[in-house]
Structure formats: C-alpha cells, structure tokens
Image 1 (spheres, rainbow, N blue to C red):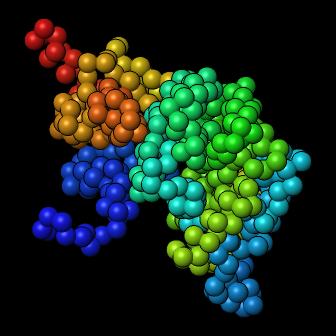
Image 2: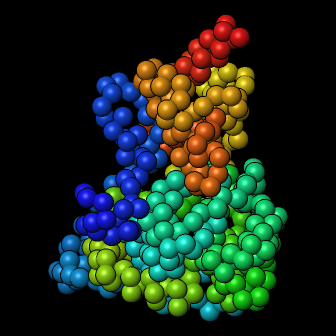
Image 3: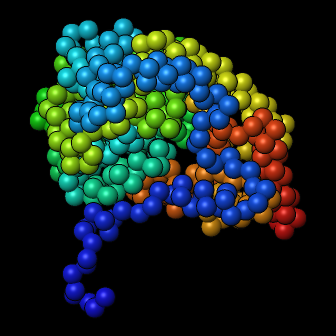
Length: 430
C-alpha cells in the first residue's frame, strides 16, 4: 500500500489479532504425539450427554414447545431463563438483598467471552484505561486491545488482587491527571485463569469500598467481575464482589456455562446496573439479535430439573482428583527450583521457574518442551503490555482439564525432563 493511502480496514480491525491460543492449538495439531497441557478445555468424559438427551427428548415431544424453541428469541435473552437465573443467584447470595435485582438486569450471551466483549464495546473508547490483574486471562486482553484501551496490570499474590495496589494505582493516576480515563476494573474472583487463586474474602468489601469512594469523588469505575470458575471451587467459595454492590451501580457480574456445564452450548450471562446492561443489549442487537434460543430453552430445562446442580457437584470431584494427580506428579518430577501454588478450583496450575529461565515462545524452555512433545501456555502471554513480564517471564500455565490421567502424568513428566536437561546443561556451562 502506498504511503498516505487510507487503509481498507478500520482502526479497530487493525488492532485486532488472533487469540494467542490459536498458534498454540496449531502446534498441537501439527505435531504428532504431542501432549498439550495448554488447552483450557473441559474434561471430555464428564460432559452430561444423558441429562441433555432426556431434557431435549421431552422438549421435542411437545410440538408447541419444540416450535417455540426453534423460533427467534430476544436479544436480551430468553425471559424464562433470565428469571431462573435471577432466582438462583438470589438464593445463592450473589446479590445484595437490597439491590433490587431481577431478570431485567440480566443479559444472556454466547459464552461469557461475548459478555466481556459487549461490556468492553459498550464502555470503552480509544485511550481509555482498564485496570486488571497481572497475570490475567489472556484472551480478554484482545477485547480491550480492539477497543484501543490501555491496560494496566496490578500485582497479585496467593490471595488475588491486592487492594492496596489498586488504591495506590488510582491515586497515582489521579496525580497524573489520568484518573478520568479509567473506565473499568476487570477481576477474576475465583480460581483465576491462569493462576488458580481465589480473591480472599476480606479483600472483597475493601475493593468495593475503594470504588465507591472514587465514584463519590466523580470517577465512576465499573468493576467487571469474571466468575467463570466459581462453581468449580474445591471448597465453599466466598461471596462474590457483586454481593457488596448494595446499589447495583458498581459491578457487572459474569458467569459462563462453558466450564460448569458444556462449552458446546456457548452460553453465559451478565448481571449489573440497568443502564450498562441496556447499552450492552443495544450493542448485542447489532451482533446477532440474541444468542441461540434453542440452547437457552434447553439450558433452562437443565437448570430447573436439577441436572445442572448434580453435574456441578460431580465436576468438582473430577477436577479435584485431576488436580491432585497433577500436583503429585509435578512434585515427583519437577526440578527443585520450580514452584507453584495449589489451585483453589478450576483446572490450571501456574508454575514459576528460576528467574533466569525464559518460558516464552521464543525461549529455550518452550523450544525444548516442544521437542519433547509437550505444550504449555507461556506465562508472558498472560500479562498486559505495560508489564515487563509480557516480554519475558519464567512462568507457565498448565491445564489438567481435558487430558486423560495417563496423558496428564506423561505430559508433566516430559515437561519436567525438558526442564531438568536445561538445568543440567546450564550447570555444566557455568
């Protein structure tokens, strides 16, 4: 293209790139015999085909119901499903009892990924700022990048986001005259992807108090709470951040049914301030007129019949057992310099190698792992561009979600062998 000619693509399109997981999946497909500890897929054998089969048969046996589910639905989401979700979440204590939340405050989307994107599209302009954890869910970085937003990563520890780090960042941005650009705080509140840690209970009200105080000073920052792994917590999870939002004006809470039920459904939801949800509905209308009405009707049946709750209880046991197996083999095989935090739920383990080792896609660790036919997610991909770890990190994300027990053990052994050989080589050359 000649210099000075206009691009045929929009600025948003130019900022949009394929998710990093795409080339990781390509590696897995192109390498025969490779074991992937990278893919964040659910356990294949636990998918609830019998529950879906029986509920679908019952629906299709009634012509009126069957024709209704085959028709268009609403952009906001099936009213019956939204009512069921509102009743369920209220009973679980997700909302503050005085917040006045009902089904009109919900939006149903094609997985929580679409809910996150809709929130970004509704809220963010070029140059706006999103605060988030470091490391964070790397796919959501693409949604913020497409909007032209600037992301700032905040330090976390084994208890999740540190309120003092949030407070210090907000004060610094105010002093720099940039606080008015901060539109959103994105937080994963349970069994985070990639670290597997859960935000400590005592930190949750403090974070809401901070945002409330800044709102009252004229800086309304939306908290986007991603609770995709809440139902896969190994122990009783703490109350969501949303529970402390007593006026329903600070938090959009999101969940996905991909991890807790079936990714094939492609359904998730958001619930939050009515003005924010209304604008997300407007945006969604330009996307698709609404997510699959067929799938939403089927999901409502699975929820109300109790099959969902039974399945979630089963999943907790499945992933608790697989996590224990992964931790056991890592403890048996990994070099002593590597360390990790046991996950609180979900299906990810965050492994930290010695600081001199580069686990990035251009580093020796990744190259040797692929040679030994095992794949992981390089930790550098999970950091926003403002963080130095986005360029070089000794961390890696391992997933025990989909693979079999035998492949899980063999994959961990291969990775440990690759690391051990590099450690020995470094020792000989020293």
